[in-house]
Length: 475
View 1 (tube, one colour):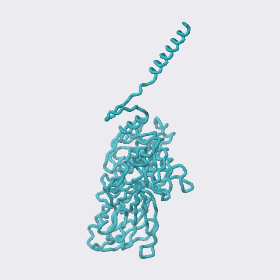
View 2 (spheres, rainbow, N blue to C red; view 1 turned 90 degrees about the vertical axis):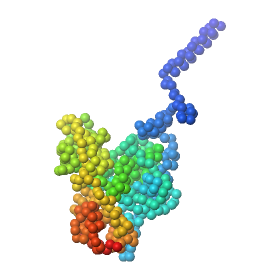
View 3 (cartoon, rainbow, N blue to C red; view 1 turned 180 degrees about the vertical axis):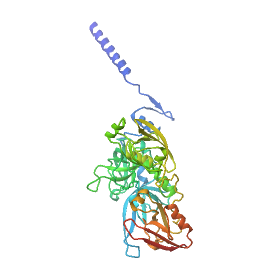
């Protein structure tokens, strides 16, 4: 009998000891109380949610994408852009076009899409997720980032909030929302596969390619659509795929939202992008170069040329310097540096970290435009839209170099307008007004405004050697 009592006592003591040890090594589960007084257990999901809400953590581990899809899908539109080719409407011309997607970014009808979706288009139609159709006006377009901004006459529209693409992490879940193959409101999921990708698709020395790479399925028709994170914030505009078949093969690329925001602000305020430059030629740092310079790693951007009187020249940068950061953001590669600089306007000042003589240094740089000016353009380029029926945009430095011309580019022509009757086409490079040379958009607008009645616009089309002249009278 005594033996049984001893065994029971030992068993009880063992159990008690086990409980004590377990409680000692296991963290206490904290119960939080919300404003309504309802208690709930802290968990990994709570931690992720509160971290995101505080702006400290921007990744997530969702088990469902329904909330993000519900937030983004109503704000993604279908775009059909028509282009007139082979002569004017009354000269045997025909219509061709492209289709893609767009993202409503404000309730009053501003829509972001890709430049290549609406390039040279004369008629743009937008269909909302609820099947309403609108005619869209092209506010402006930037081929160097492949971003364009449209406007429709509507209010109280669903829209997507811009997220912070810098905080997006490799491995984070994202959704691609668009209209592939004209299948409206299609949502696909994937992860961020890489950041700062350059796939040499935009062309031109002034292009900015620092794409977010994802494995979310993107196909023809997705261009211009939304890439959103798991809480429905816009982190990119879907732009391109790498494929041998012409369809999705596992890689898609999006313009980061922080760059898109800057382009959109410029297009709304000026009608064109106020592009800032450092005034340097650059390349990625090779491992051998990093060892020679005593860099701690092969990360950074090597300066191979400094433009005379450019922003970098005035700040004292030299050939052989390695740019390693701007405004406390590291610049590990050429695409990252181009993206960061591309978010600024001429005249803005940045803090630049560079490596020289085996040590890190810092300097302040006032950025300039392609003409080494620190001033932003005075005009939007749409001054003649209502009266004459056309819009202008500034030429990029890459376009000036490639074409060997200076002037301004006709970005759109309104059907039925005074200029439309001359058969002028979007893409016309305006070099002279009434015989006087114009070197940029400011001079072009001043010349047209100061002309009395008769106006002659001379210029060229890319790829053609003939000089074109268009004559009309102001009303």
